[in-house]
Length: 292
Picture 1 (cartoon, rainbow, N blue to C red):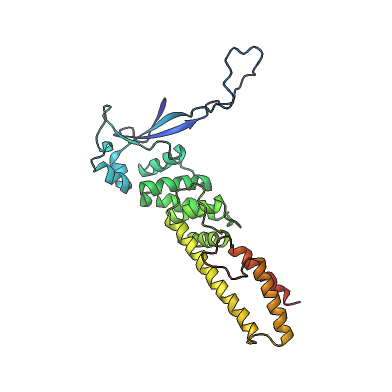
Picture 2: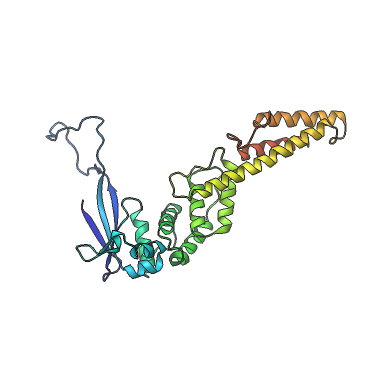
C-alpha cells in the first residue's frame, strides 16, 4: 500500500492515517487495440479487489488533544495510539471511514492553518465535515467556520419536499453544528414525509434522532386520528352541521377522504405506511371543496 503525506504541522509528532480507496481500473488515455492485446482477459464476473493508498497527515498531538475530546481521552489511555511507534511518531489510524478532503480541512482548522480555506461549502462536503467533527468531538474548535459555512449555504437552499438524502444531510449538519432552528425545521419535514422510520442514507446520524422523529410522527398521527373520529362522532350525534343534508354531505366527504388515506377503518399506532403529508393534503383538498 503506497502512501502520501501532508504536513499539517511540519514539526508534528503524530501521524493521522486514512485509507483511500482507488479505482482498480482508471480510464485509459490511450486507444486500445483488442486484436493485438497480449494481456490475458479477466474472467467475466470476477470482482476486482479494492485498492487503497494511505494518506498521512503529520499533526501536533497537543493541538489534537486540545481541540478533540476523543483525542484527549485516547492519548491519555493505555491504547497503542498513546505510545510512539518505531518511527518516533504517534499513529492514529482511521481506516477508510472518512473523506480525505474533509479531514484535511478539519485538521487545518484545529492547527490554526486557516489561510486558503474555502469561503463556502456545498452540503455534501458539509456533511462529511460534520461526520468528522462529531466523531472527534471537536465542536468548539470548528464552530466559527462551520457556522459560517452553514449560514452561507442556508442563504441559497430550499428545504426538500420529500424524505431524501439532502434532508438527511441537513439534519446531520444542523445537529452537529448546533443550528437549532434548521434542525427543528428539518426534523419536522422528516416526520411529515416518512412512513416507517426515517432513512439515514448511511449517514452517521445519531440513533436517537430518527427515533425521536418517528415518535413525533406517531404522536401527530394519533392526535389527527383522534380528532377526525371525534368529528365523525359529532356529525353522527348531530353536534355539527346546520341541517341533515349538510351533516350527510360532510360525513360522506369525511369518510371518503379517510378511507382514501387509510384512516378508515381506524388504524392503530404506530401507523406504518401512513404519511402525514398525504393525509394533510387530502384533508386540505376536502376543506377547499366544501366552499363550492
